Amino acid sequence: MSDEDFDNLPEPSLRNVVEQQSLNWIFVGGKGGVGKTTTSCCIGIQMALRRQKVLIISTDPAHNLSDAFSQKFNKDPTLVRGFENLYCMEIDANDDMDALQKEIEGVTGAGAGEEDGSVSSLVAELTSNIPGIDEAMSFSELMKQVQEMDYDCVVFDTAPTGHTLRLLSFPTILENALGKVMDLKDKFGGIINQAGAMFAGMRGGNAASGQQMTDALLGKLEETRGVINKVNTAFRDKNKTTFVCVCIPEFLSIYETERLVQELSKFGIDSHNIVVNQVLFPEKDAEELGEWYDENKSTLPKEAQDICAKMMARKRMQDKYIGQCFDLYGDGPDAFHVTLMPLLDFEVRGTDKLRTFSQNLVDPIDVEE
Image (cartoon, rainbow, N blue to C red; front, side, top):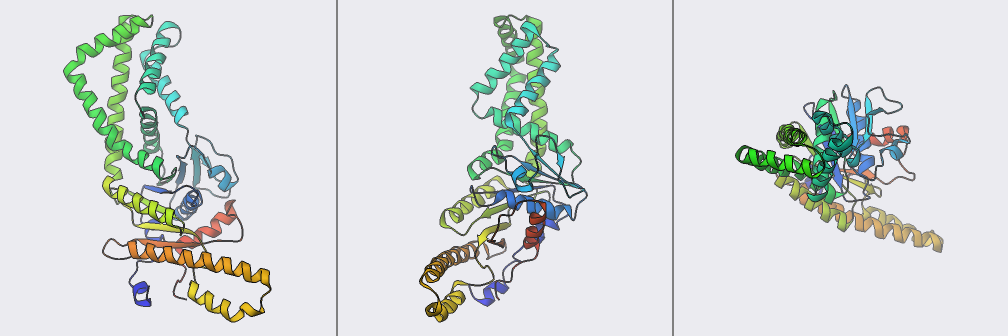
């Protein structure tokens, strides 16, 4: 790209995100292994400098927040060492489903014995026989918790792209599905109650316990529908929600980022930022480094020449895909802010290193130098 092209690009940083006071939810996602957790932590740190209270949630079954901060986290929000207003939590879908089952048992008054078995069996059969219902209901419970918490901003460290797209599709899927279920309840309420009573009888309960189970489940579905309606509205509000795409300068990662951007557009979710991690010397280009290498190659030992040759090959490849990234997302009224994050000589782990590295998100590297 020419210097004039670079002059017309949006600022290559996440300053537009961290300084947007209206944002409540920031999702961070991309292909596996591109640095989503590190980026999520860095965004959370920058948000904590500007907000009263910030929470980072890991929705990836293979949690990494604990490893990134070198501090153990669990399903409850835990204050990050070295901060007064930054918290982390790692959720588990199984824990959410267990909590949901206990809540329904509490509503029905079932505590032990046959009735308790009936409730447990009903919930277990529902979650095992409806594909994806466990993830969907877990997501509903998560969003309910998030809405009840008093955090100014929540950063979601998501799983790899495929899982994340399923997560983001849950509000629409659940809203449609629950709407149909409630319509059926209104039309066939008597039949549903009879079915509940029959199920309870088959499990050793009675008609009264069957009615309680039916009412509890339908009541829970109605409550879930209300939560999902709010979530769906918030997801589509660019003033409240945005998605930060993370990639590395390689073909598969750039390709998957394009697919992710297109899917986010279908869902109506705002996305105007791409973070490119593991960039070799982002302030220089391959041509400039190649000139230096050609001038000094003869003075280098054979091993050093081999090392430099491999580095130059990698740099040329990275520059090619970074250029494609700017070409894809840098033009037009909906241009993206593309932020280049440098490849370092060490792992970014621990609060101090994350805090320092996070500055690269808001202090853009001058790619024209």
